[in-house]
Image (cartoon, rainbow, N blue to C red; front, side, top):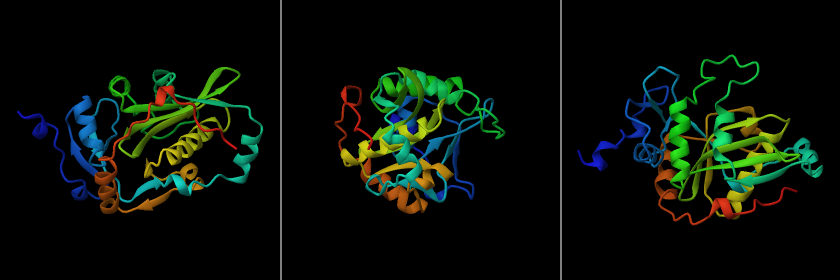
Length: 231
């Protein structure tokens, strides 16, 4: 079967009311890239078939519209943290996959071992990236996702020290703005991203943005780049 057909997803605008686009498939690099290029991402519980989603509406951050709350600015001024890109992607995603303290949602362990392996392969291929937050030379927080063209699809984050994942996300958004990225996909609403200026866009608009943004050339070398300093 031709690979172009093999990894072709249904039109995301025809997703069901919950945003489910497709069931099944695999987590190969080709399949994942085909999904992201259509604004679709995998999300499923251990033991379930792979589920592919395109929520309505979609929560996004336009990098130039980033809002940093006053309380977070106070933390930034203390200069307690430093940040890196792609220095330890595997450690970041493994930490993101660990059960969270006081976690009660059924999706708590959605980053399965297969997902971890798949995104490590995606990272090795140059598509998945991480931002690491360090405190006293120890990894204390981070975020990872997928970069295609001028859009970054955020996947997950973790925090071992208060505010560390939030600062890693802010560092990412500020750097995306420097690199002229169009937007950061946050997938679903949360208090955190809303406080940072995220907004809802309808699925139809988001799908059009993805089609355009993923066609742009992304030449940034993440691992050899020093993140912009927070201030």
